[in-house]
Length: 94
Image 1 (spheres, one colour):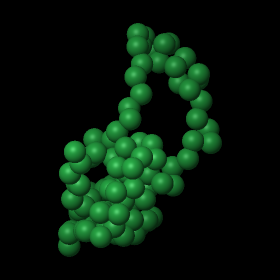
Image 2 (cartoon, rainbow, N blue to C red):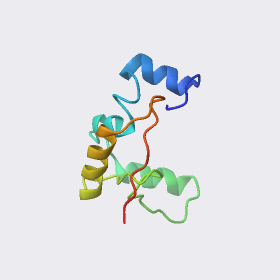
Image 3 (tube, helix red, strand yellow):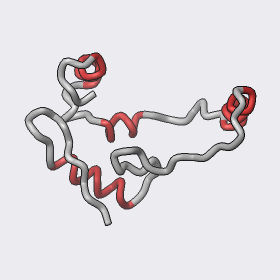
Image 4 (tube, rainbow, N blue to C red):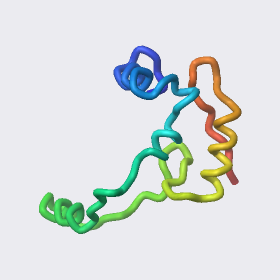
């Protein structure tokens, strides 16, 4: 969604606006779990042959997938910094 000319970028701009104004973190905030059905999903995994399951706590770009202190700091940093292309730099956390 951050690479100009890609289908995901065009879709994102058309539906949400430029990624520097409405990026991944804003998309993350509109995703809700009203239809979350963990029992149904685990059943699907078992029927597909899955032997174990693990839950992910952080997205690949250091974004926690729950309301954490790091997520709040990242939201602040990313709201202040955006390059002309709309790509957002990753904050460094220790």
